[in-house]
Length: 411
Image 1 (cartoon, helix red, strand yellow):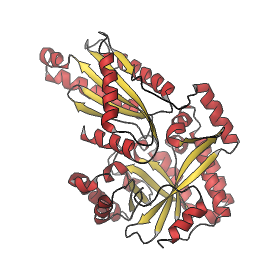
Image 2: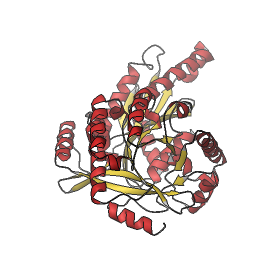
Image 3: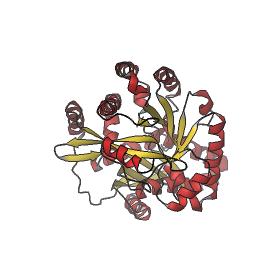
Image 4: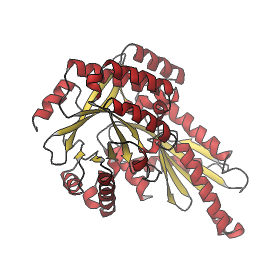
């Protein structure tokens, strides 16, 4: 429970846009299964349910689940608007009722959910809204899913309208980029700029938290990832890169698994070999499970161009850290949920120190993200990380030239 609550708090309270579905699931009759069929049967049911929930959240590197109590579970999945949220909720309910929670055990379950979209949300309020939806669902004797009927002032599009928007915006070069400086451990220099994307469409600026779930749903991730990398390269042509600095683009697992993406990326780098050495490509740790072999192949090629390879959201995946030895990596980035409130969490401090030791033994740099408090900055520095980023230092910068100008203040 603590791990889930810490991750959801990090997503909702950080000063970045979020757009997703918070789900609470409650089983009824688990005590009766334990009494009538034995503890082993109840444990088997919970184990199978846990596996199915992990399968459900495996669709996105930003999705995760957790067990909150004996018969209570929670999930978070990114989505673009309440229309998609409702469809996603019903899809998950259908998978559960035809999967683990079918008639075999005769259990009834109820699901309550709330769609969350803003820059900051109160985690307690979000959970209360999801719980209110759960209580409403429990008015029905059969297994039911209910979405919280809250306010939502943002414009919503159908799936077809989203696809048209995304296709036309890409063709019209509607992507805009922002740059987040990553400072060295002693804050004496900039090591990297994380590249964040936004979409400009008909006078509206749409954050990646909102549009990216639809990019993945419509199988456009490879096209968008390539467009973002190409935009970075074009910007570096106009605004020469800073010496010794990397410009980091996070790509999706779908792109890593796409052979055509590999070919097009290689062609892009071949056309600008003098800039390739300033780039870094990274993938989220939760996405590694099905993409590790493809990432290894891609990384081998990219490193011949001088591109650095990294893994972010470290600590949130389910894989053992042996992948650090198997993959040709240059750095890892500790997920911000571990760094938020770090000065009050000895266990997370120990985790980061352990990761630093493991990574440094493999000649990998370790970076921390999402720091917003001075106390956390101090503790994170003491763990031995090589660099860190977050709103404590600055917000994402819309212009590359301005990002370079900002960095000159500390260099």
